[in-house]
Image (cartoon, rainbow, N blue to C red; front, side):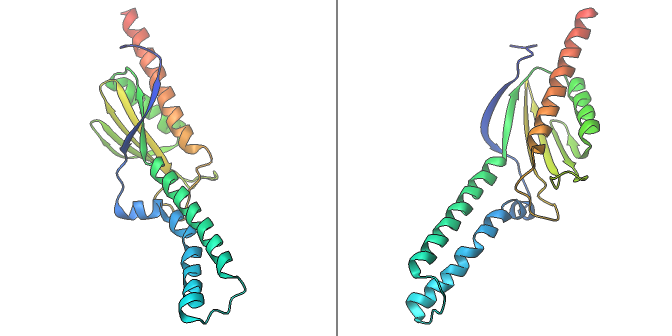
Length: 192
């Protein structure tokens, strides 16, 4: 349905591309949760192989703690992997409406456009005294659809797995602006 103001969201397995360094930082929270299992692994080697374990925990307790942290690491891996997916919006818009929506959103949310090509935009939103350390926003556009992703800044100084709502706000604001710019374009073209 061309010209429709309804925006439908479809989850797709397409993911954003990050450099190796960005990927490592994006998944670093997983490595953080693996510190305890690796430390416990050494204690288990001391307990079962070297027979030199002096710790206060029994082997069963070490296994339970290790298992808990491995489960947490696995859950965060899946969460971080899922965050790399684009969200697809089926929406009718013009190139001008897209550019106006991008400009308006950049002004509202203080995005810094770092790369803009035909059909592709990448922007950052810096920290600026919010709880989030900033986000990386990636937008791909095509015929009647927009793919958008917002993740915690993979180049921030500190590990961040929580955006405090900014990732959703980045997506919601841009799509709302694009939707309203497209509606304005439709109204203007009817008047002519």
